[in-house]
Length: 162
Ligand code: SF4
Image (tube, rainbow, N blue to C red):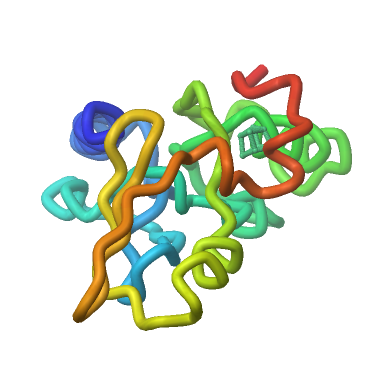
């Protein structure tokens, strides 16, 4: 996941620097663990804000509607399908988009994790391959990602962006 973060940062920096796009839309680490947030970046020097892990579930396509600028955007399989719908419905033009596809392995359901730790406060989450570790003030648990995937990700058959 860290490798994807670096790759996304590198790509966004380059696209903004050489003015291929006016803005890059991706995720930044949330102020609250397990809640990464959408971020719009225009300054290449701010590309290191971009972040990627299995808590990037919010739909970035909501930021595409009726824009006129050229946009770089991170896409999973489902986001890319949503982009196609936006294009078909004339919400955005295909030529405005530079799509950075991520081979998605599914998003973690933060509510399920919260239940697992008995609603104790989680202060940090670290993902490592197929597992992730949640840390609180007086506990630490390592969990298998496959046991905590969002329902739509469990049944998803098209992880790769189209
Ligand atoms: S696993 Fe499928 S449904 Fe889940 S975020 Fe990835 S592409 Fe979307």
